[in-house]
Length: 534
Image (cartoon, rainbow, N blue to C red; front, top):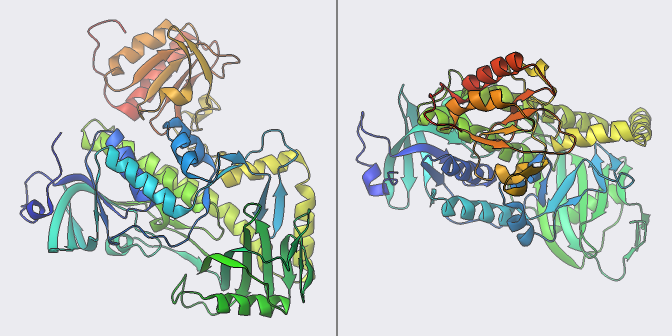
């Protein structure tokens, strides 16, 4: 495999020459680094351009939650991420939702899991992983202009040693809410910016503040402040524990719609002024660990792809709620990488790359649905709005709506629209981690997909399926296994761990053979006749 060109060599590229990289990734945050690693697993050459010269320690997200945790486990990475976190991934006993709380503590298997891992650590881990796999990350290199033709994308870059240009087959903007790639490509980003100003602090509290067993606080001058959200005519005050020592404290007030995020940087004085306006007195603070200011936006690009330019992560969508952006963004990268690789390697079926927009726009719209519902629940402060929250909270004492909403937040309910999706309920869904028995011993779905290769998993005595799949064995892995309570006779699992095809239990051979052949061609290209038995 050809190595990436150096910066000096990249200045010498000419039209018609071999591109300097297969894919240029703009942005080395969680989305860009995840994409670079997945591209390397698929055998292509990414070049990551990051305008920041060094990793930043600016506090952002506190951790990961939702479907991405299962995906990391399927890549064999979850243990590594848990080692850098404050502890292992865990079921979420409670979760805030639009001014109410979802209480999962009474469920034996809560539908939402989390991992407490500050974003700065997450970004380093993902960048290390991409580097170990052979991806090049150039820090302090800023995209200033781009263009595309039928064969390549050209990026004009400002680097530490001056300007240069670099070419690739594709370019992906993973460069955040203010995406330069999105703007240069002319991708519309419709939606709304809400007038709320949210100020968030992580603090330890002095001995003068008493934390009660139920999570409430006893505060001088303020008295008892209940855990969760306190609403006054001036805004919302929220508190909740991160661990036995550290508290999350949030204030929300309406303000002017211009300006966004930490510009200029928020100060403790500004935060305390906000607390005072809402509650009427200060909250004593012993140690300040994090302080940030942000607004919520609800936006989604109309198209995730324009020719050879694509967008992912916050460049493609912004959600008016915390705790879901990283999950959606990193899953964008996983969905996109193998499809780009298929196109670059020349075997992609017609329109395979277009399914990136179809599937991830669908998933982003689902996330927008629940986060905008949260915004509607929490925005208004009158008696009618409180009545709505009370009724909503009461409905969530029932297990079925509680589980359904937890799955919606986690993204575990996503079932991509796919050909023949009515053939089996599993098609389009994330593959379950079945415990498997093979002739080589016990294994699992998670272990079989570490390398991010397609997998035909045959769970019954179906020799006709092996016979068909042998013509694609250069492109997919084939595994026969037994499992308890099998969901299907066979599953065709894509590199992103979603099920592309399934054979119903005891399905007639002629039907299953026909639909398997169609699905293999649809997702993994033309067959190649086998010369030896599988």
